[in-house]
Amino acid sequence: VIAGTGTVVRATKQRAAVAALLAREDEFHSAQEVHDLLKQSGERVGLTTVYRSLQILADTQAVDVLQTADGETLYRHCSSGHHHHLVCRQCGRTVEVDGPAVERWADDVAAKNQYVDVSHTVEIFGTCPQCASA
Ligand SMILES: [Zn+2]
Ligand SMILES: [Zn+2]
Ligand SMILES: [Zn+2]
Image 1 (cartoon, rainbow, N blue to C red):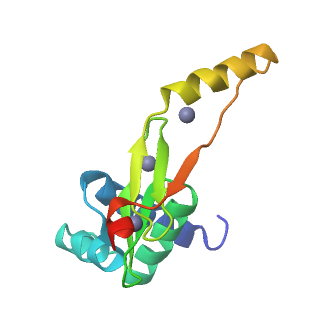
Image 2 (cartoon, rainbow, N blue to C red):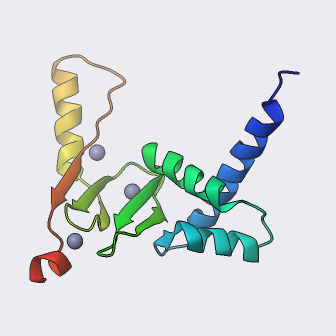
């Protein structure tokens, strides 16, 4: 047994609990809210772990991130299927969008150049209606 494995397993389990909670929720939630909701459902995950888990999930794009006007960071489960994001440059409000034309173009370009196993990432940045009217 490698020393410290227990800690790693526990951290992975707690991250899974955070991810599972967000998967059940449709709304954006702050780390504090995620922590409270986990507590209500009987999961014992420390606030620091919740913060760290959310950071990792955001880094791997497993969650969508929203920055509120007062600087609070909110998180929401990101759909598992392939999709793109329309992101507000000012507040971070994120809308999940399909891009059929982008999918066709990507397949086309790959096929023409005989590339296989291709993938792509497309994020669209702009100013959301709320920020534009502010
Ligand atoms: Zn998403
Ligand atoms: Zn905005
Ligand atoms: Zn795509």
